[in-house]
Image 1 (cartoon, rainbow, N blue to C red):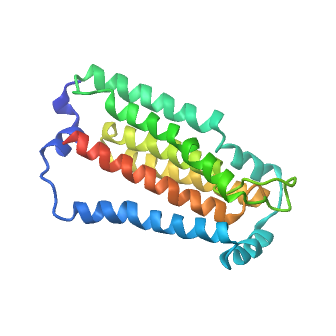
Image 2 (image 1 turned 135 degrees about the vertical axis):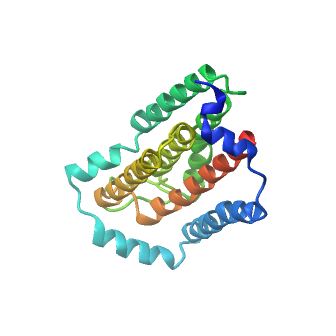
Image 3 (image 1 turned 180 degrees about the horizontal axis):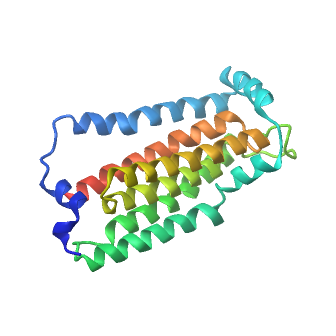
Length: 223
């Protein structure tokens, strides 16, 4: 396979920068960052948003095996190997095709998942949020590490893989699969009572920031 048969890389390299891209990048990173700061502030000061969050949790919690299995899709042992396999596959294909810096997208995707605990763990310790009544008494539930892991691992896998998926149906299927997996993890965590809904939504914002940064980086690297 030659580099000329890699349409995604060729198109990215030849396309001139569009005037709206800086604004698009700012929106891609700025909006989820703003929401994440708002949610974190509400948790830190025990603001009025937590009352709504707790009412929503009471309405949604219904522990069961199905919810637990869905939540398990966000385990490090499940989500990270998916990213590792995709990163290895795409790196091998890029190297075989003679793509310059063939290793860069895969390394960037793997570096992103390493950042998740570096961000989440200190926030858990700082906010010290207690868990729902469905779990044993403990603190450190905000934000949801399982949701962040699922969002970044499955999302980064798709971003790294997309340039090698030529047909639109294959690309749409990859994106839809990642969204379904993250949604399943999120619902399972809330349904099982492992996390408050706000813990999960905050991790969506965190995942969107990290994946948005990866997307912008990969586009810039391709050019």
